Length: 282
Ligand code: MG
Image (tube, rainbow, N blue to C red; front, side, top):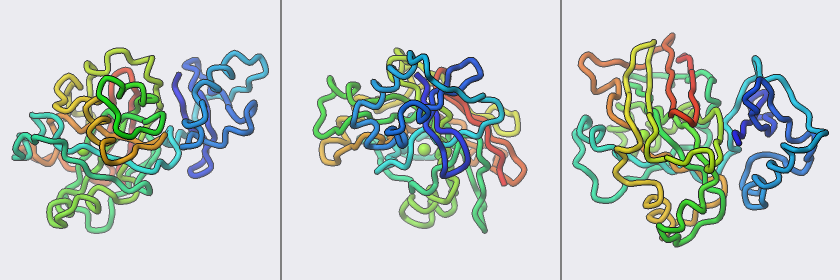
């Protein structure tokens, strides 16, 4: 299944992307499914959706021209992994990390997959980073690696937009990666069973039509089961939480000449089989 949230910003409704030009309007049948939030995932929401798909009374809306929001309502945490692809770590002059570098993005930075990315006042060096993100499906604490994927509801695409000058000068990455609109997510939450080979997915980005990133999740150093285990040893993951797994090499700011996000630019990025985004830069 591909879960979407559709409609006006902050008034999105939960839906299922049918792939035939229609979106199942979940609330037309299930008033109690308020949104794709912690409560939804914790209370067998995905199982309920599967039943709705077979309901003859299901109502649909046309997908054409509909705005999509992030496929998950505001989660308790957006945890990101830095320098998780060796070639990307090298292009930034990082040592290869011995343990995952974790940071977080502000939930208010969340942006629909095709919403504009609005550069903050004074922005100088802004990059987009195409990433595969994991959505947690049930409360996870001290999870063993062998069980880790049982805690994953599915996958989505996340753009870890970053203002490098602020990132580097602040000592902490939170502000440079946390500006409003700096976290486009979606378009879909693709449920886990639809992606059997999570370790072999192309991750790519184009800026103004030129290919910047063309990597593969096969090159991720810390894999998803390890990340869920590592984080959950001391930090409880809640249903709906997002773990963004890092970006491959090819980032614009470390190219020669640099390719920087500027007003009027267009970012397209995606993970094959999971989805793609297209954002105008304002
Ligand atoms: Mg990143």
